[in-house]
Length: 158
Image 1: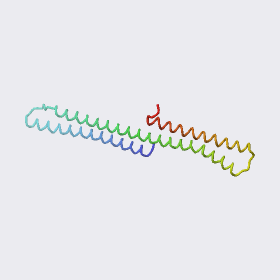
Image 2 (image 1 turned 135 degrees about the vertical axis):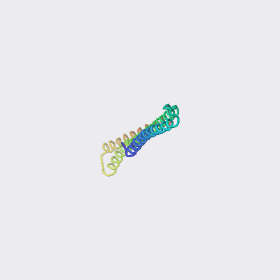
Image 3 (image 1 turned 45 degrees about the vertical axis):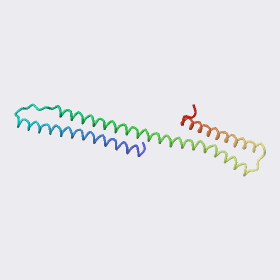
């Protein structure tokens, strides 16, 4: 897990903890407020029955809104992780392509340096020239595959 993913995970967990804490404190406040209102109602009217429809409606709406907040946070968190994973895959792909392209180039360079530095018989020179041509072919195939991949990504190739 990258540092950025770890930070996003910590922020997400803290946000969920804050939402749950808010929910608990809010419920305690509503219960306390209800007890106060009920006590005042009994003191004024002498009845113990207080209409609780509004209280339950407010409580239900609060829970629904908090559930929506948690859902939205979860979606943002999932998208962030997915984006980070995609960026890591892009970096890995670029590293792999770079490695695959450098290998034939290194071989060509070694063959060319050897040809330049040594006096060799024609058979050995032909073998080195064949090695250079083979690596050039391999490099060309890799580049063609990359171009085809890019076209497929852009939807130009079916």
